[in-house]
Length: 258
Image 1 (cartoon, rainbow, N blue to C red):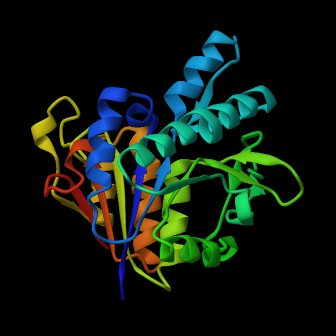
Image 2: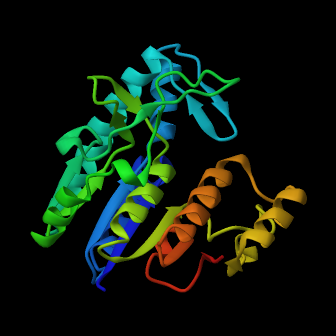
C-alpha cells in the first residue's frame, strides 16, 4: 500500500516567514503523496486582540463565539491558507487550498458539551470525510492544503482544531494508503524538560503519556496533539510523530506508539 504523508503545522510556523520557508522547502521533498494541514491560532489571537475580541481557551482548545469565528475564517481559510498555497506554487509544488466546506470534504457537527459552551466549534469523524475527492486530487499529483475550518451541511462554518483535522484525515485515508501522521511545531518533540530542546523523548506509548501527565510534563497545548495522534494509531494509521518543523526529514522527534 502506498504511503501518504499527512503533515500538520501550527500557527507558530505558518505565521512566521523565517520558519515557514525552510519547512515548505523540506515538505516538497517528501517522496510520497502528501497533504498539509495548518492552524493559525497565534495570528487569529493577535487579530482578536487588535479588535478587542476576548480570547478564551479550555485545555488548549479555543472557544469560538461569532466574532471569533469571523476572525478564524478570515485568517485560517483566507490569509494563511492562500499564502501557503502561493508559496508552494513558487517552489513548483502544485497545491490547492481547501476548507472542510469545499467539495463537502469535512462536514462537522457543532460541539454539544455538557458543561462548556465552545460556541461555533465543529467536531468531526472519519466516517464523514469524503476521501474520494482527496484521492482524486492526490492521483492528479496535487497537494491539498487544509485550513482548520469545517461546516455543518446547513450553511454554517465551524472552527475545528487543526490537530483533530489532521488525525481524522489520516484515519479516513488509511483504507487507501499507509498513512504517516506528523505534527510539526517549534520544539524537537515531546520534551522531558520544556526548557531544554535536547531533552526530546524518542518514543512514547500510552502508558508513558499517562506517566508524563501525572508528572505534569505535558503542557496544555501538547494534549490535543498526543490525544489525536494516539486516536489515529488506534484507528488504522501506521505511524505518528511530533517533530520540529525543521526536522521533518530527520530522525529527531518523538514517535508515538501503542
